[in-house]
Amino acid sequence: MPLKKSKQIKKSKQIWRENFSIRNCAYHMGAPACDDMANLLPPIFSNILTEYIWVQKGDDNPGSYFEISQLKKFIDKIMQTILEHPAQINEIHRQGLSTTKEYFKYAHSLEKVNWAVLSKAELIKKYEKLIDWQMIHHGWLVSTTWFVDSDGEDLSQYLLTKATQLTAGSRLSVSDVFSVLTTPHQPSQALLEEKEVLLIFKMIMANSEARKLFSQTEVKKIEIDLNRLSPGLNKKIIAHYKKWRWAPYTYMGPAYELDYYLALWRDWMKKKINYQARLKELQNYSSDVLRKKAAIIKKLKISQRDQETFKIASDIIYLKSFRKDAIFHGMYILDKILKEVGRRLKISLTQARYLAHWEVPVAIRTGRFSEKILNERRTSSVIFQKKSKSFIYSGDQAKKFLAGLKFEKKAVIKSSGLVGTVACPGQARGRVKIVNLPEEMGKMKTGDIMVAHTTFPSLVPAMKKAAAIITDDGGLTCHAAIVARELKKPCVVGTKSATTVLHDGDLVTVDASRGIIKIIKRK
Image (cartoon, rainbow, N blue to C red; front, side):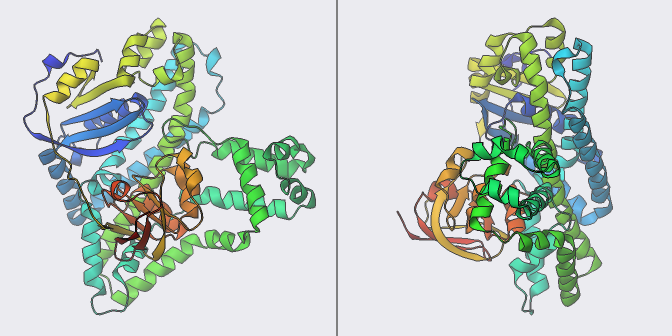
């Protein structure tokens, strides 16, 4: 779609609310997402959100905005459908799971492609098909796996209220019932990867030559001497690295290098971790979750209707995790394509990420695109989606466009404590460490309280060290909530302001069974 001038857009007089923000993300995610939310939502949810704004500053999306009344109407419609027409939601989820699997499958088929030898037509065809799957799977699932809990945690609050009613007069805690009934029995990609990495560690521990190799301090030396291992074990190690290296990629990488896994196994050997116990937990994961659910359902005599609602919630959590993993893997593959596009256009990968998806085929055919435009977009720009049309504004145009809109003011919160939503029950006490980026993980020590605006896969090593996890963002489908349950870590999400109220070194107590954080002593 050609660029449009801001004067062509009639400004809305309504109030816009920030719905999400994303670190390390560009147009390769933002432009297709704006497009698919306009054109590829399930029919029952279409034509409610008609306008939205994606803001770009550097390599971050500091805010994406929706008109408040439209957003509320949209979420109300999703909640109504969950409660009154669960069969429709189940069908959306069935199709969403299918499209996400196809996206994963197609992206995986591109991993070994030699992009440099493809013709223009071949490169365009593979790019367009990958983007199509990216948009289809996202558009189909984003309503339930993001929006329903994104503005006031409507679904979480409904389920917490329901759990409170169900537990009245019983000895079961609200937080335990809520947590168990909303936990998916299907293992996430993270749990599947953890199981595989533990099985390789089991092979290492059973092999004297491998134990000797991984007892060395220097990871580089371990890597150099890997060929000393039996061919079978060596092959397993390399295959695992290649299969899962995309896991922390999110939208811009980096992926894991081999040394990540070598250091992991070396450290496990040094710490003498009880890998057998964790393997048993993972092997019994699905049956344990189903057993706990069945026990609660029987004890509380939960109706079929309420069971259905909680099942939909657990499906949403599983699908949110699976959808995000699919798109992170897809971004890992997409960057390979964009790197080749950049080579042909004589621009960098970073610049290529600021091509909108409709511009890429034309740029490949012509072999050119303005570097000035791409650089301006990266510095400061806006994508404005109005129904099925996308408009891009950069620099002064973006400033003028945003100046013509009215945005909701954020409340400034000053407090000696915080309240959020229970994601995983439990209690903890420790020192706060604010970790928003992978490069900040080094300050985390075992037993610290991890505080983040939001979490994502590359922060999981820090999450594993935490005594408890607290986030600004919330909802039962957020990454922190999902991972905390898998790790069995106390977790409170949706505090809105933990990263501004709390500071590194503050001593706090976390009552994740009630969603309460108290500051004991400031640093």
